[in-house]
Every structure is written in structure tokens, then in C-alpha cells.
Image (cartoon, rainbow, N blue to C red; front, top):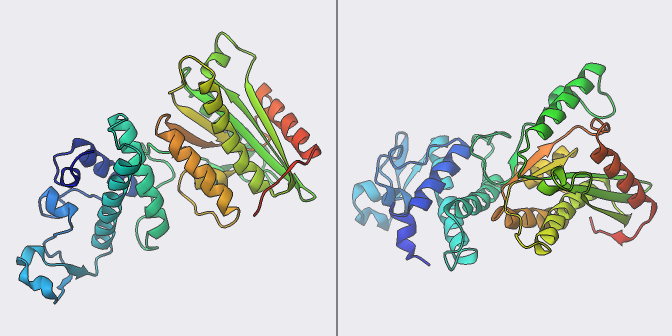
Length: 334
């Protein structure tokens, strides 16, 4: 493990790059140039007075004027200093918990750091600070693809035009998946208090030499909600890939594309929403996704429900889900 000063003095290329990418995601410039100081000073938040600031009268007055702590009314300045503090913690935590022996590539370390930082940012971001967009070219952890939910309506009230648009969006998303990536299709539902979840996984070989085959799983719940089943299905899909990797000579390390018709589940896993119910389950699946993302790059995708039924995958997922609803087995606390 590096000396902690190396993390924050600007000499660690991974740290500098990760902080820049984190800033791009949250739409704030975290560069030392923006703060009119050097990188090390910006890491330790030894910042020169900014416009519209008030100097704090404390024992810190013994410090040089440029390094005294300041309060500011600027929302941008407050957000930037908050973001740097979060990033410093996220980088330190990633290094001591996940990469103590310097295992992992620069990309894996960066993804883990940003994943941790984004989780903290979304929990503590002030309401008047900028909202990270749902789509961003530099979203490495759990990159949530544009859903188009607002344009396609809901399952119960879609017009003919909205159904056609939703189907087109779904087809384009699926066709865009690289041949060397894995795809997870999930679904869940609830009826009369019972719930069922199902998942179909297509590994790269299932679109090549083993076309027509897949990995699949189903789970029924004696008590559960639609949201319970939707989130559970995502977790099952990720676990299926992990199990498949354990059974092969060369564990899968490619990208994973998750397709779910639950916009809420997609947003929760992508750190764009805070779970209000099923919190234990949501945090468990989110943690699983974070761990998988240190090896595989996960792409979360919303796909309109009941509009990809023409594919064999959708038909199979629906059948598995109905089978799950028909045989209650497990109970999940909500």
C-alpha cells in the first residue's frame, strides 16, 4: 500500500485521473486550477479565499492567509469542497479495503473509487447542487443507459406510438451489446401478496458456439412485492455469472449488460435513487454489483416491460416468473 501522502499530493496518476472523472460525473470541476491552488493544497482543502467568502476567526489565524479555512455562500464552492472531501475518503477506503496488495488495474481502482464516492455523494448532496445526469459518457460504475421512460409512458397506458418507440429503443440497446459481453434479462411481479422473480443470462458463448442455450433461474416468495422481485432478479443474474465463472477455465471478465423493466431498480443500482423500502435487499444487491464491477464493467439498462415479448429471451423470462409465482418458497423482509 502506498504512503497516504502519495494519494493526495498529485503524484499518484490514478488518484488524479479518478478525481477528474468523479468531477465530470457530478458536473463540478475539481481541478486545483479551478480552486486557484496546487493539487496537494486542494486535496487537504487548504484553499485561498474565494469570491463571496468570509474568513473564519479561529486559531487557524496562525496559518498563512491563503490556507485559513473559509465559509462561502457560493453553492458551487461548497459542492466542490464537499466533493473533494468525499473523494479523499473514497480513495483511501478503496485502497485499504479492496486493493491492499495493489491488486487490480488502474481502471478497476478508478471504478471502485468512483463507485464509493458516488454512493456517498448521492446520500449527502444538497438539493440545490447539480444533479448527476442519468446518462454520462464517463460513468464507469453501473452506467445507467438512457431509459426514455418519460417518452414511452407506463405499461398500462402506452399508446401505439409509444409502444413502437419503446420497442425500437429496446432493440437498439440489445443490438448495441458487444459480442464479447454478457447480457442479463430480469423480471419480477407480485400478485395476492406472493411474488416471483426470474432471470435469463446470455454469456458470449450463448450467442456463438452455444447459441440457443442460456443460464436461467427463478425464485418465488411467500410474501413480497413487485419491487422485491425486480431487485432480487438482478442479484440472481449477477450471481449466475459469478457461478458460471467458477465453473470455467477462464473466468469471465468482460462487460455485463443488465436489462430490467424496473426503472427504480436500475436507478438504485446505478446510485441515482435512494431505496425507501426493501432497504436491506437493495443495499445487498448494490454491494454485490459494486463487487462485481471491480472486475466486470456493469451497464444498467431500463427496457420497457412486455415490449420485447417477440424475443425468445423475454418469453422464457415470463414463463420462469409465472412458475416462480406459482410455487411460494421464500420470504423477504420489507
